Length: 430
Image (cartoon, rainbow, N blue to C red; front, side):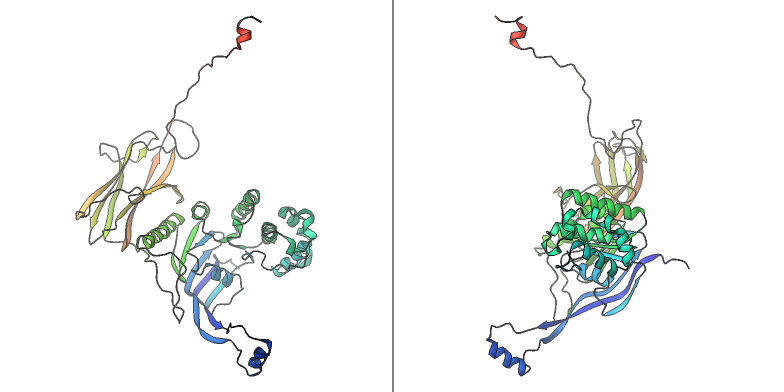
């Protein structure tokens, strides 16, 4: 039987919670007992809070997918649905493979049991047999680096020790899908590097990783795809560089409008109040004809690190666009941003009245990239939408340097005069 291509599939998934309130005034034991006997201390049923609103998401097998979004957008709720902690209010979920999860710090640990006992319990919960857990016990303990503390109650552990134990267990049960919710932010630098190396090993072995994080640099560098969730909706799924750029743009627009980027307010029926206008493709400014040229205007496809180059793109204006921003991004073929800037970042003034058609030129006095294949992406952003153009170009060099860029430099090798002590210079004592 052929294995499914997707590790996780969600179709129209909704998750709602019922609001329940209990009167919180201070009372005596006698009055509270009378209230209970009269049946007046039952929780009041309120409306619904809808955390997720028709989520449609496919996570391919063997991919590393990040879920980003502001606090309160529904990221952790989504992970708890995937791991089976919550059940969906409606919709269909397909999980293909054994899941191991790192969610709330210390979740699943009994505080009065030792670390060793909790390893056994968690391993069984995650689908292993007692024999399998015992066979991997030494490896788990060695990875956690807890030493003699492994036989102490986990209630005596620090947050870092909790995290070490949780990560060691989750990654040694050989899961098909690893779910991580910000927990790697806890711990020292040594263990963070060790954890990242372990997750890199997972990637190479074709495991599926779902990561919730606010570290956008890690998302762009490490993930294959990104899903942006806001207000309980999936706003966009795509390449890390593109989704992260639009997410940053949404934050910038909210700040520009003096809006506080906070968790979405909820109406009585659970509907999220929109706080971010997500740009859509093709705004009032359209781009076309992106090309790289020499300072003289001749189009070039193959460049060298030391040449000057201009990024040229034509634009047309089809409506008001007072908040226009041009952005230039130099990327690797995989979509990893190597350099990005924009007219807004550099406070470049744009004409208040743009012509109906024009040309934007981004002038690089020196390219500086080493030999390789690169992608140039130019975006025109407004509150109404974004238009993009991209092109691929080659850089060649006769120097076998390694890395990505070539900083301006030169070498100096020269003799250094030897300082002689005064006593030795005079031939001895005066």
